[in-house]
Image: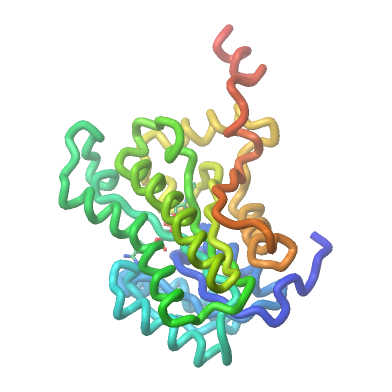
Length: 271
Ligand code: NAI
């Protein structure tokens, strides 16, 4: 794509790059290409896998461990990032999701509630924690942009998405609610991007993922959105080009969310 320096001079934090399939990994690569400076972060246990160091080297970034459910870690991350990057922040990507109920194959009608609380804490509440820490410490520049990644199971039922659906509904609600306060006080924007099924560690953990992926691909007039295209869109959302968009859940899904049925699906059903 022929755009350059869309994020020149901007500073940020990118959560959630686990390996080169991660959506956050692609976002980091694109932000780097577009001239941004940023720190990378992930849960200490994920950092032990080591892949993130390769990305950090590629992007000239520092890696700062932070469990997104721990306020001390988050406060430290925000403060250190400012010090390292040399000023206030312009963007943050929250790209975090995990459900022990999904991992342990607990069906939605037989959830373990300790796991459920963890799902909500890691995949939903952690966004509030990031926002609250950023709001209180006043780390964001005016017109800054904060994004989290969501999925359409927040609006429609996908039985195997399990308690992650509730976490995504919470996540999207937090973006709206906090977006009001952050917008009023600091002109900072808060949005969620609802992405197509994507082959990553988190995505592939959902039961029946391959079928879900193929189904969405057949329904969507543009086909499924790739992680790369999602990363391009995140760059736009971090740039000043999207400066009046806030408190939205934006579908980045090739048209899936607005399509009832496709000719291709009818043809398959008729066979
Ligand atoms: P991924 O598995 O590469 O990324 C998930 C990340 O969450 C990992 O880096 C993991 O270490 C991190 N994480 C888990 N617990 C954490 C904690 N306590 N503190 C800090 N980080 C923690 O998978 P992917 O697909 O790139 O996921 C990124 C986001 O995109 C998630 O919010 C996911 O729900 C969302 N999404 C993914 C889709 C897919 O089909 N892959 C579709 C729509 C949204």
